[in-house]
Figure 1 (tube, helix red, strand yellow):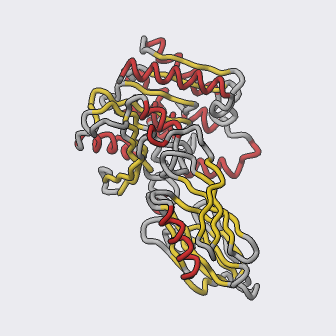
Figure 2: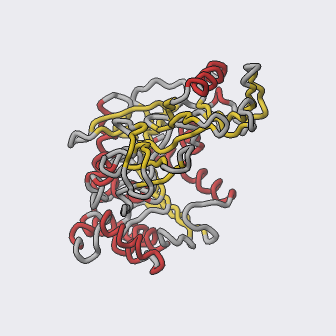
Figure 3: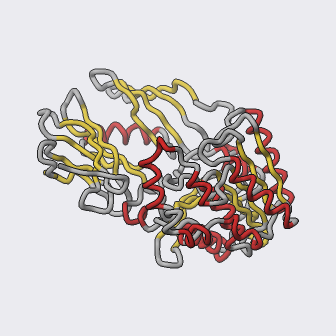
Length: 413
């Protein structure tokens, strides 16, 4: 019998063409998730189909008509393909030659596998839909998903990497404003939420908004980000505000050393865990940031862990292992909670919160705002009564981005 948990993964994908063995994505017995063939009765791994030395591999496609495996997709800096079948490889090659610079997906096809629906994406738009006729080698545009976006006005998202202070490779993305040299720029550091998630290459409206307003944007997949293997994930356990934050700080220092960032005009902005990282950045490395924007972020790890509802009990145990136990790790959690160190925060802060947030309660934002205002630190607070974990109503989103733009222009513009 096989047992899995949030660290050990086995995802059955589909049975082989004899309906006997199963193809699966698995990291059992290895660091990275790989595509394997298994015996479902014994749990024995029979064959390694494909693995990548740096990232997890999750997907495998097949042909119902020809009964062959087609290919595998994985994400390093963007989605890549490893073909197991020459015919499908040639189809992709033909399509990609007509759509230079685009990520291409074959989303659907007819029973004869001769007519395909093609979806594209890139970093400057939401992409297009096409049909592709294999026999005629004909690609026909069905429509753009975001025709209102002028791609010439959008900024390019480039992959970058740097080394953390303890030797870990950190991958990320840098977006520079159009028509600006990569020199002495105002920068917004934008750590992702989750934190068990990852940033990807592609169209990101927030990033484009910030770049359009003249700010460079750095996103990084700090330790604990998904897709880089189990060891990269577990290196983040009980490291909120510690080594996870060091990875973000090391990205800031990389930007400064490269001459890209103006050291006096660096802001940090993020939502959920990214909001916590914002507060941690202003608290534990106040010398790095001119200001911060905390969007539905955690300020107190004790009250955050207490807010987990009873019906999430398995999740609670996972959080205790990954973040810390409120009694056994009391000193750790206190040292990593910005609320207990507000005397270190000097930079202006803008906080946005939904009153009905079930995950990061309003109290998380109330605590930090009240504590900072008592100390005379400039703190703007946007509380929306009709929102939850993140703003979803369009008028509230407009309010937030207008206010954030004004705040950033004032302090680093």
